[in-house]
Length: 257
Image (cartoon, rainbow, N blue to C red; front, side, top):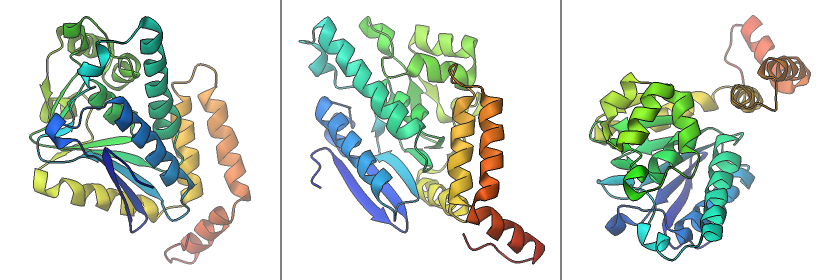
């Protein structure tokens, strides 16, 4: 499929999705959201893909927010639809993905860009990355799930400080508050992300998908996370991966999932 504003490549079971608007600091306009949705659907359907990496083109930005020029003529109804679309992509296609999704944050991750990164299962950042939710400085608030995900990740007080001041923080500050998994030199960022995914790929993909769902249930008020965990735990006893994993453990060999 042809994409206007992103690059899509599958290599060694990893789908690399690169937001490719470097001249606009990879800002998320509506075309880019359309491309992102299509790429994520493609990655989910591709049986060769075991994990997904989302990053930004160039050295300056992961995604430096939404494309504000498109906001000027939006009606309240249009804005509602845009927010719903962002929520769908970030929640249904990223957060609820059965395949692990990692954000490789290689520069500015602001507004919708940080919201995109927070929807991913993990976030690895270069030591030059800057993070923030500047929406209140535009008379808005984060509209793609940022108020909820940031609060879950760093706590109410820190989330409110970031959102209400609209200030940027460093990758190191993000790491200290639990927003970022690891901070790395820019030249080693992608290698580390691939290393982590390769480690995950050596595990049972069935168990990985179940674990992602169980962790997501922790924040879903419509589900009892403990019951979800119990169901997944017991259902995995019926899988070939469980039989192989136990046989490999008892035989003191590596499992072949």
